[in-house]
Image (tube, rainbow, N blue to C red):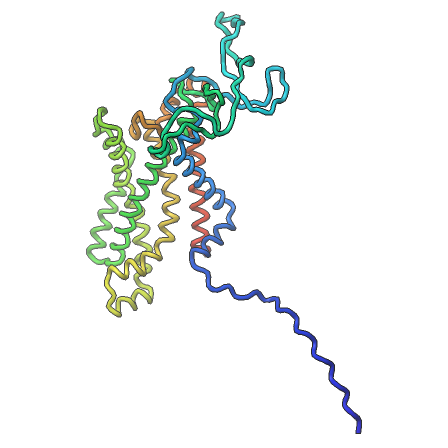
Length: 378
């Protein structure tokens, strides 16, 4: 009888290549992971963060006092790394305008040009015009300005000699404040009315929707102009600004209400909502616990897309003189200097606020598009 050969020793088990389970991701984690895949959405997010930081720390970021006056319609003074002989220097500087000894052969006026003999050195965290950070903390440091305290107009000046860049930075605070406040009021009223109307339905929904259609039927621009003219010119600035915010909010909530109502009508027929009704849950609990969390994704996207609309509206009304009154500063109010074509052609840097408006609109629109794909990828 043949002896059995011994069986070979078992091979060592290969390490598993399957990644261990990381648990269930929350909905917000999924939305963030999808948003990071969109480069336009992330670009919009970073731009929105930068805009908010600029609005909060406007005094620190502005190189000059926005109310200080200098030479009217002075052209931009771009930082230079060359001296008057063209040699490279490590310290950035600007050259102010001054009258030269040469005369114009036609007008016999002194020719205005850069003063290369007296450069103004630039630096970070330099002392400048005093201010109160957040309205409480006295300070005089500015992020980037001339080291000797002399004016440095990186984007030129307006007709009164005020620094355009500093005014644009300060104007972001008022423009974004108006937009965020109006959109917040629109979101609260529109979401509440839309959920209540869509959930209860019946005669209440019919009458509420007729009222919403009445608000939507108003021609908004003539109504804006008519309502804002009701405030007397001598009214305080805060009263005028508050009235403008109320008017924008009163005419803007209806569209948000209509969108939320449509989402609520679909959610009210889902099984878990009907189960909550069957077990005797109150209407308030159903709306807040089951319907509201499911409409929030749509509301967030609608908010990011509504803010650029309000910014454009404020800029347009400010250009016409119906949004913000001095001494407040906004992008729309700054655009009043561009009312004539001769000014635009001769002093094109006056259009700088348009660039800030375009960047703001692009930032929030890009963020809204990225969020729309992230919250509902299908």
